[in-house]
Image (cartoon, rainbow, N blue to C red; front, side):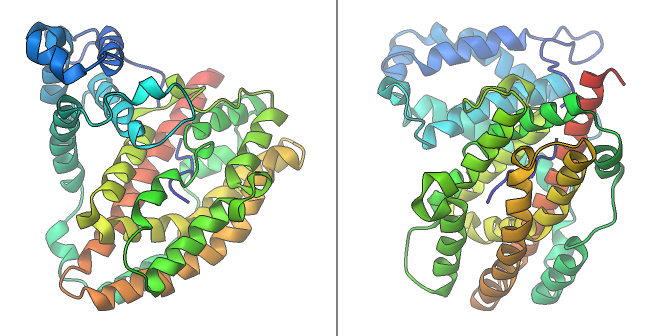
Length: 366
């Protein structure tokens, strides 16, 4: 699975002033303009003949990139705008069983340029959050094993305690709404890393994927269980039905995952991140299930969590013992990237979790 452990934005902050004395672009209007570009027939050809077609969006993009990732002073509105734009490009790599014309520009050179430009600044900022040089000096197998032992049953964070002990029924519904952004298309991005030469690592990854997809039976697919939870609390089960609620920190997790799965050079980072996700998943889902039990919800309204607690305990062992450690042996020079992926997934997931709780608190009027 990747990456459904809701690590719950603050409320939608697009349009808020980015910096004192610096007028912020209207990011809502800029995103709407970008959506129109996405659906423009023969976009690249249109831009070539009408360069001013992209002027409004480009101006907002330049401002957002200039202010979003200032160390210690990130512009939240700009971060949200950039992650939403990046997500709209990345999602073209998945098929949504919608109008085929929505994919006319899925190989647009202009869209690729926008994606690469955002990723360059954002990924440099993400890497700056970790001591990469120190990671290169680690005994990789020992580091992964020790991290997994801790993350199987970590101490409760303030965010986890809030979810377990304080979150209301309305807060639980809000949590599901945000989580549906990923939960209703669960594991889809994993398809990009399954192809290639056959070996034990590949076969283990396929086994994880097949279990996430209910071994090909829709009734057993994990996203089906998620949809049933949503139905039980009266939520819309349309994929992306609650995209407006999703904080940039959660979008960043998805966009990071798109990057790592699409670029095979990041194969080790991806599998390090997936190892963390599967190892830590049960502890995260126990928080959600504890909240549902406290709220006296039905089995249907918490069934997805129960399923994942059971299956991810097995997936975590598979990922560590049959994927991450064998890859460390196979790629001794680059093996440190497994730890980088692991630590990045944890850091970004924790950050997203704090953002989701902040959104829930805001919704509840706390």
